[in-house]
Length: 252
Ligand code: 13P
Image (cartoon, rainbow, N blue to C red; front, side, top):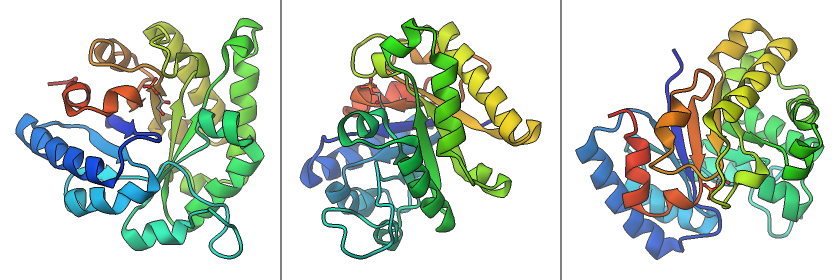
């Protein structure tokens, strides 16, 4: 049985003071609700310490949205995984489609980061997903295969329990268009089968695959009811406690 894993990716929202107030409200609401899923929030780098002040010893994991592909050195503007670990951050989102789309990241460059994060024992949420053009031209499986094969290149079987895959169709992100639960489940099944062929049935069965793309309180239940959907990576609806809490408690 795979435990549901619901995560909030704040993207470039919430400065440190806003983030701290939000974390306090979220923690209170989560405690009162008895939420029973694995929970995570990923604030912008500069807001992480303020959020950790509140959530450090709580059931809500604090993650980063990205990290550097080196430990230290002359890489202006980058944030080392060692700095994250020093703060107490052990989870990182890598390869988000916005990183691929706007900052030139590729499966190969993301792979470098994934291997480095795993070397340091971090949990990685690796994002994959197709654009509308790719879907409409029948390239969904080809795109996912490329992203999984190259993104996970040289990742050892024994490290696969540290990998979570987030399937985020680019056309569903921030657009209000959600993949139907059936379409999302089909893509998740394809991802699971690909992992089975790259690793083993056992690893594929244990793999947590989150869906991301306009997840809201009113569609999370139908998505989570699907066999291969094990969690959600939530953008916009994770920015307000009133929107996020019903997603975290979808199974209550
Ligand atoms: P939205 O939930 O705003 O569509 O964003 C999804 C996402 O990109 C999460 O990483």
